[in-house]
Length: 220
Image (cartoon, rainbow, N blue to C red; front, side, top):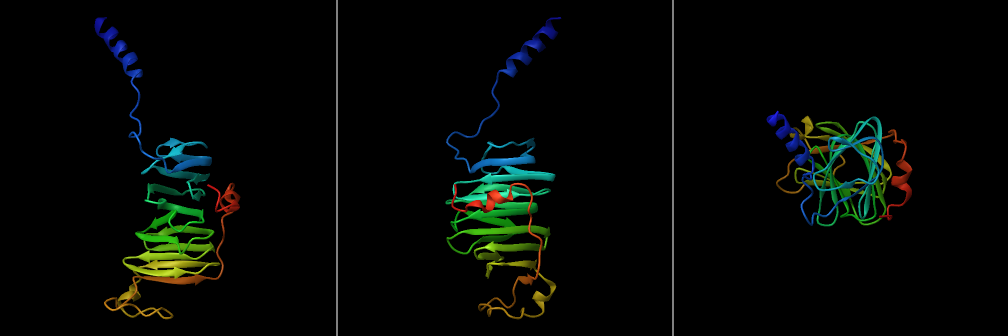
């Protein structure tokens, strides 16, 4: 009886101990502004949740989520997931699965990491882009508004506004010959580590909430 009472007492005492909080002074990256069928780390998320460095945001098959930072917005359609990290002047979104759409007016405010490749706005100015992780060696990128800078394994190339692209990483032909219609590579770089092909037509996601991403790249 005494052991049972002691166990019950410990349960009540432990119930009053607060869970570990974020480190004091840790700055937030932004907040979740819309969520449906979405998760924040391992829990279901709703609008108003604060996001910190290292947090994982993901969506169910029919889900959708929008994150808003100080100078950029991020939208996830269904079956998508990202891990967010803080940069000196913005946010890095590591795309783990599916698709993301970002909107910003500052080049340093948003950086996308996908398959070890980096996608950033090419310059300050309204930028809206979509990145899809097709496989471990293939990406789909749409530069909806504003140009992008694509970087992979020390090589970079500009992605023009108003087109959709298929990006192949470490293509087999890279070891055989340079790609046509490319800017000549620098000395010491015999071949490109990626191949970018323009796609004539590609679907653009229109799920709930996407208009919020396009509404105003300048809105915090």
